[in-house]
Image (cartoon, one colour):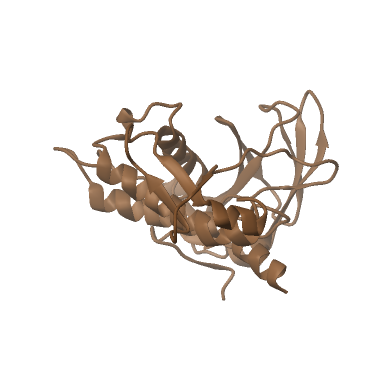
Length: 258
């Protein structure tokens, strides 16, 4: 497997294993981050600059990485307790100014002191589902479907947050949630900010690198096939994200099985 490969949008994908991001200091004035990028994943014929984008609950700040071997960067646009996530992007300069040449998926930093508190991504409700492991119930408000996991699984694994169980159901639940929304509403404008649908679309647009299609989901300006392709790319990036202990959900599942 190579360090970086083409993703669906022809943009090189920088594997997170070749990037190290650590929060080394938090204060009221700044959060200091140390980042190291393996230079061999950055080779390209194009001129570029390397940037580190930080995100937290709708806030965003960008810093330029001047030395891929290791920089300390101060992020001043976040509260001291921010639950930060990062993306490293290789951005073209010159005649192709601004085009993203390569990028990582979402990366959670290693916290040198303390732990970052995170809100769960999806919260399923345990219920009796017979032989179904989980389902999404679309009755009622389409923007707020009910996410359900079989109560037997919740009992056997001890919690829907068990890493083995999450690796099995979360990517598939995300896929059905995104595709279900895209096929049931004409535009994301129909999804209020406080609904599950509104939050999940906003989450994927902000956190993943999948290229956003133009137009609405359906209707006169609809572009449903491209939006469904976008949803699939988001699911792939979600599965590749290191959510806990610098491991993907699949890695955690394999670790638990040893």
